[in-house]
Length: 186
View 1 (cartoon, rainbow, N blue to C red):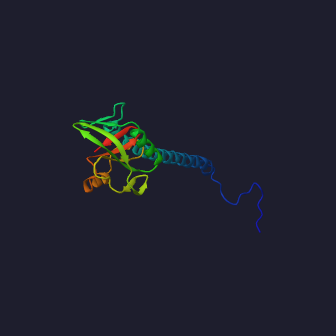
View 2 (view 1 turned 90 degrees about the vertical axis):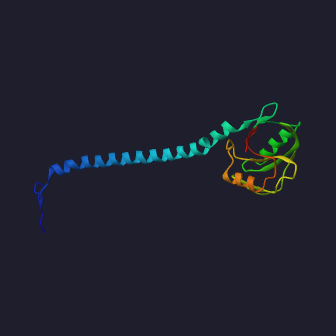
View 3 (view 1 turned 60 degrees about the vertical axis):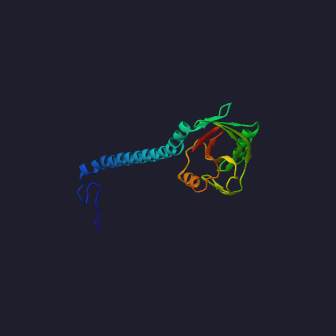
């Protein structure tokens, strides 16, 4: 067995190598921090992009081209649409009851020239509904406006909405209600 005294070292020590180790560890630490900051920035960017795309960009066209209800009713595409007393409140109440899911209702009434007076609301049988779609029976004959709801401020009809409009036109006009008092006619 070899015994060495404290002053004797069985191998050679390279002081430069030992002193350079903390510098290498510091470089690795800085690289890890930079990578972590980059990943955090990318995640933040993805979250913001999703939020803007879902709540912002999709909402802007609907807000610009949607019609907002006034005291006298709606004016859209050269037509004046007004409601008999209590009818508009019934529509808003029905939409609020189905908050979180799409729903459909049929506006009935009379048309004289460019003026439409809505006198009643018909609620067709809803077959299925969820956050992004509603399947229902058709509106009865004599329906002036077939309306379905969309999530808040998402006023633009989907491709499926347009397909449904052309495959089974059950009213003279079709509209999306995307918030209280805001309609988009298509």
